[in-house]
Length: 476
Image (cartoon, one colour):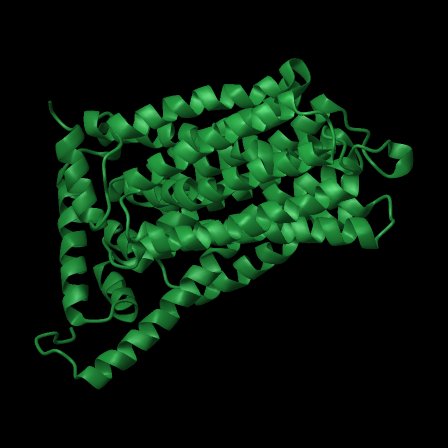
């Protein structure tokens, strides 16, 4: 075994830092291809729905408000299943192999939606695509967190959210360009087919990244874990410290209760419920009502189809800029403070949007004010709430069952997402703009939960977080 008793020279250490940064950058880039596919697949539905709603004789699928919600939410229900199953799969077969399998589903699902001849087949293939989206959403943050190490974890895991919103922005730009440049009734098929690209890149990339050292330790493969850490950490001291912490946790897990018994322990159940509650917080802000249905909302103000699709580019640009600010902020501010700040502005933006749509006459001014409210909402949502949610999903849960618990919590988040996606068009038809005030009430409840119930994890290693959670949520 390599002797770590002496520290390397400053030149050697600088070279090591550069190579470490390059390797970690490659791993994060490959892993977040899953997030890019996630973003594109969830964003492209916004631009393709108006064209799919055309009659079959005009190249569409003849969607109505019910089938619009069904087509949109089928991917999300699939994501709920995918995130749940992938959690157990990643614990059993590893994060890297799980991502490779999900890449195949990304490709198959995207191709299936592009050639779907009817609504039932479209729903089925969107469900398959959703399994890949959900699986990636649960696996990618955990993989990055375990690869990155304590000091890089927050900004690198937050890049997952950056790639999600980048994928959505690409989807909005593709939708807009195609809607103006192409006059083909099957334009929506081309939009959906492009989703295969990040899936292909993810599949190829998984052959060039290492396995998670945390997973290797959990499997008892210590020498392999050490070899991986040597390539991913800057100093021998970091390697020794992290390896010692992981082996200590693995030893405790091996001597401790079985996975079945562990799932019944009070502190683990509390953690899982906290993770699920955070999924409710993230989704019942109403964010995906805007990400999926902004064109439909703006059309109610009198804006044209192409113009309303083009306006979604603003959603994408604001989301990307906000996420970049969020990546900077998440290393400097506490998780709790960021969530409470984000929820406060989200509540005010929802109130303003509801009042704008309810009190102002239908004209261009109403359209622009409504869009401004949506953009303010999205800026603080993507800066303060979404990055923190995915970061917490990567760090809250214990090593032995991290994949399974993260997958289950993210699965519940997708169920909340699907509920919003399926119900929003019908709620808009049923109670109109009062829907946005309903979101306000739910967000106030979320703020109360974060204030009183959420623990702070900033500045701690994954092993320190596990020890803290065991102490905090253990025996009373």
